[in-house]
Length: 248
Ligand code: OAD
Image (cartoon, rainbow, N blue to C red; front, side, top):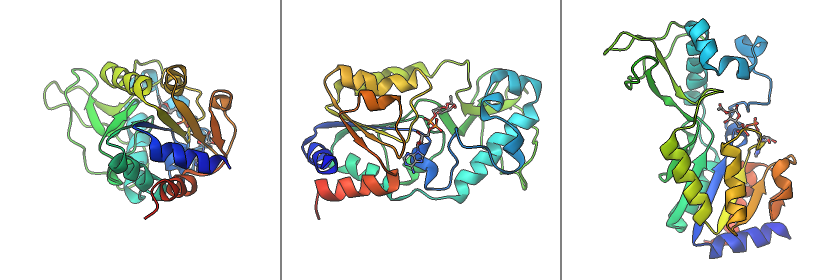
């Protein structure tokens, strides 16, 4: 039974990486990228909004969309899967969480060793001079919202996330690659594995001899390289694995 193997591997692991994507936040109520956007934003394609060009062309539309997402994230809560990831960190001192997600659900569940490869909704910065900016009060309703201006140079404040066509933060990417290279067990949870270079992380672990376990209700490109494919949801499988690895 693959799940028992994964739990035994988890119990015996010395260096664990948990690599997460949008599916990790799905059961908290945060839509994944490949699901249609809902409500006001349903007529937009996320890829069309998450670009420097979109922000340049219509800062209020793009800033408003990210503030809608930040408001959504603040209304939801981490689920048992996020808590299970934090429990793994507590049991395995040399463990690292590498996330493609820009929400703060891992932090709110207690994860501390966390690398955000695609930035965060909670780290806005000036689009002109790069100064970090305070988070403004959330807008009353979800709509176009003119971005605040930079205190230092009066430039427009942008979300602190990585947009299509932009490089990932180099420090985070090298730390994530190093963690994947050095781990003995990597869980890939809730990612379609379509967006590089983040999607390379599980392959780095596999090439360096780590065991790769994938948790996803659907097959993905990673099926071919994962040693164990657990077909299911993050909020169900992760707590089960932790219970089996470390029975109370
Ligand atoms: P996707 O929306 O591409 O994939 C979400 C994955 O989660 C899919 O494979 C689903 O099958 C799976 N999934 C859905 N519900 C799940 C659940 N309850 N438990 C476990 N898995 C579940 O999201 P990502 O792979 O994270 O990039 O997308 C990667 C990147 O593409 C994002 O970081 C973003 C996006 O463009 C940037 O913003 C730069």
